[in-house]
Structure formats: structure tokens, C-alpha cells
Image 1 (cartoon, rainbow, N blue to C red):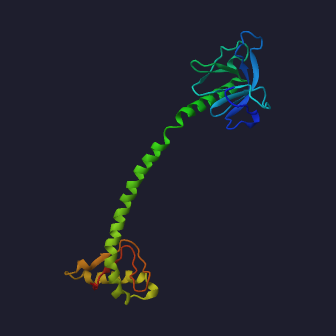
Image 2 (cartoon, helix red, strand yellow; image 1 turned 180 degrees about the vertical axis):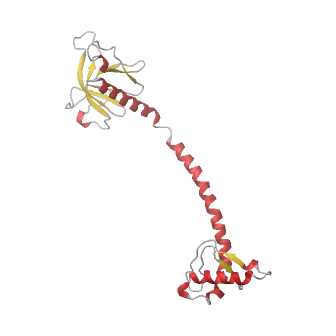
Image 3 (cartoon, rainbow, N blue to C red; image 1 turned 30 degrees about the vertical axis):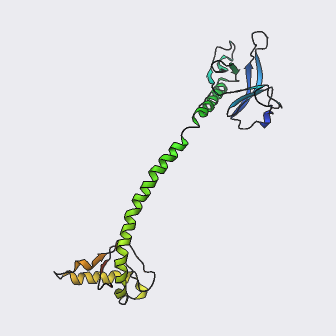
Length: 230
């Protein structure tokens, strides 16, 4: 045997198991052409035992490089549609019979899945991660930059203006007070043709002052600057 002895119950990573009839390698010389075997498919090896209680396998083979297919020419009795074979160039051919055609198809499909997985599991992961990193990094920077610029441009102009306005706005009505004052101020000056538009500002978002002398306003509020502290 190519692999160390292992009990049927101690096999790890078994993907499919069950009883099959296995065709003997020297079947042309002996009368018992097919023998009942408990078979188990792992990730890389196909094991076969005399029963599922055996302490050691009767044989095994690595499935890498093999292909599997149904073959109804292996028998001439009622089980001819239950046969499949596992073949590879320049290697021994393994032929089996299941209890039903459906069970044989299940073995074939499972073997094909494992064989395909063996050839494809090494390739894609690192390439996918590289693509994600390249795509995510620029998009995060692009979104953050304009937001930061607008914040740092507007806040220095708004904070000094909060000093004269704080005296005219009651502390309990921080949110509503500035909005009402701004609307009145705007309407008072709107009739004047010489309106000083350079000192008008409009809130771009809601802002709540953290201390009593900071201005509180909402998005859309019109703010008129009475004086600037240099």
C-alpha cells in the first residue's frame, strides 16, 4: 500500500462512502470477478475495505490525474447500468458497480467534483484580493476629500460670528432662535437695493453649538454676519 494503514472509522475528510462491488484486477483468471467492498472517497484518495468495520484498508489509490465515467459495457446482467470506472493514462483502471444506476451517478458526480476542485483550488484568491484593494483605496479618498475641504473652509468664518449673535438668542431655544433671527434679518435687508450680500451665508448642514457662546443653526438657515473679529 502507498498509504499507512487506517481503520475505516478513523478516516478523515470523507466526502462519500458506501458499499460497492469492485472488479478484481486479475478477474480473467478467477471465478469471483466482482467483490463487495466498503469504499470511501477523501479529498485526494479513494480507499476500499472489506467492510466498514475493518481496521485496515485492502487498498487505495490517489485520484489525482484520473477521470471518471459511467460504463454499461462492464457487465451483461441487470446491473450493467450501475457500473462506472475511474481511469488515467498509464495507470491501473478501477471499475465499480453500485446498487442502483442513481447511486452510480452520485459516485460519478462526487468524484468529478473532487477532481475538478483539486485542479482549481490554488488559483484565484490572491488576484481577487489585489483587485479589491486597488478599487477600494482610491474611492475612499475621493469621497473624503471634498467633505473635509468644505468643513475647514466654512467653520472659521462661522465661529467668530457666533459671539455677537449669542447675546440676542435665548439659551433654551438654541435650535429655533437663530433660524427665526436669520429669516427676519434677511427679510429686513431684502428691500434694500444695496444689500451687503458678501456678509450673507447659508447653512449647509445642521449645527448645534457645544457651549453657550457658539451659534446653533440648521441646514438652509440664512446667517448675516454683523461683524468679524480679526
